Image 1 (cartoon, one colour):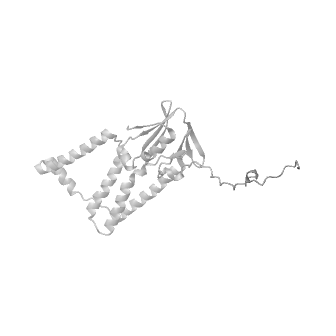
Image 2 (tube, one colour):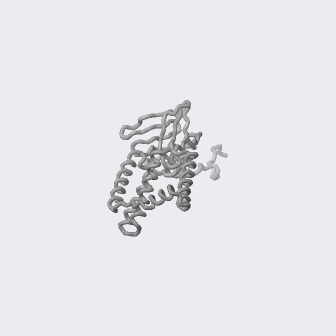
Image 3 (cartoon, one colour):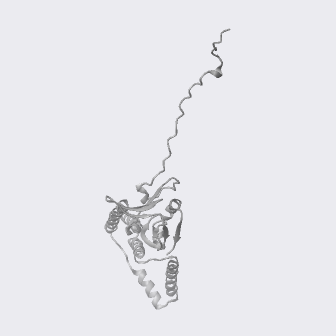
Length: 260
């Protein structure tokens, strides 16, 4: 008998067939903020590694006057409303916006102002019904005023507000902040980084200094960056700040909300 070993035909002894290459999933990347987030923050993104926001000019709050004057121009041009009615409407919108500029009404002051206006109006109305000379004269004087503007005046004021608003919307595009997990960076384009604040030892606080500004900016307010107890940066007039807070809290960990 030969001592030469014989090759086995058993399937177990055969080399296994090479397996086809398994497609590898691409590595996941964390999404970043968009330049347009300063105008309209996107939905809260758990993968975002930064939050971008900016301070807006005060023309932001004049959208009620802009809409009112555009409406007055159209209604008066079509002769669908009395000129005096439209005049009072436009004057009221303008007076409201001017009030926003010259006052800062926190929650308590806002409630006091609302109650004071309601009581004053109620007092004038009751006084006119009771025949009190002062109140009846004031009521009659106000009712006799004929506030009117021409259609061209409404249109020109509207055009000015549109132009200034567009000009104001450019500012947040070139002057903005990026809140990152390790630092807060202020950018001024085209120069780039203007200021950098380390995240370590810093806190972020949301303030609502004025209820009217809060309403007109759809939950906006002021973001204050403090380091070692001192305010090192204030980002005023940030629209939709309430909508941004969830992403900021997730990114930075701890924030506080205050009503000044």
